[in-house]
Image (cartoon, rainbow, N blue to C red; front, side):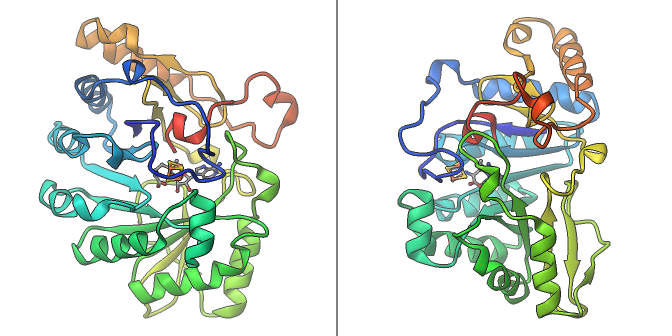
Length: 312
Ligand code: SAM
Ligand code: SF4
């Protein structure tokens, strides 16, 4: 279950949360105790892995206390976090002490000016430093790269090199038509894989388990690090998708693509059993497949909110 703890962010990535977008009022955001209760109900239903996300999770005060408490829930095996890495240095020691199981760091370019442009003012050096801090702390570290036409298409080889050099996973994520994401600007992951195979003919499928997600991994024999492909648009993985999302406002979204979901707030005033059964019902609403590529199905039911509001 991906848990978005805020829709706020210290960056303004053009495809996620462009400048001037609406923010949700704090009074509508779930309190930490409420998030914890939903996570406990999820654990009772067999959910074992929680990903903390946002918005930018580290802009919400007290987020590490929440992570610590979720880590302590009986039945939860893994708590990981996704971040832009702009202020991870302030939290890394605590994350290590909590025993956080993985940190995914988003980075779309290795050029500081392009980084500043795509993130609306971010500092690439800080994110690169966070990748090193995370790796050096011994926490499983992954980099998320969203490939975009006329922006970073020429950097895919450099990002694979980053994976080999640092011995980490670099994942290529296809741009999805969510919020400000314009899928026409996205790049088919098959094209990226072809380019990497031309550069490294020894690239081979990596069958080892890297997590529980939809990424398909490749590696080079004897070289640390892997490249992963999350191909939501051109390689639909819906039949094996076991994810649900909890938005910062308390909606369970069984699929990223549709705006439908179950508002858990009314059940927070009820007993633990009622809350758990409401969550079960929300999970069972999971559709067979997303509708990103089907205009007819999409009409009327497609998610209109920004990625930062849903929880990426
Ligand atoms: N702020 C954190 C970060 O940047 O990692 C966590 C939230 S962010 C929404 C999570 C991930 O979603 C990031 O890797 C971001 O690049 C990705 N993302 C945002 N909008 C997207 C879109 N339209 N299509 C694909 N990925 C997207
Ligand atoms: Fe913020 Fe992450 Fe969205 Fe960029 S991708 S605007 S860092 S939430």
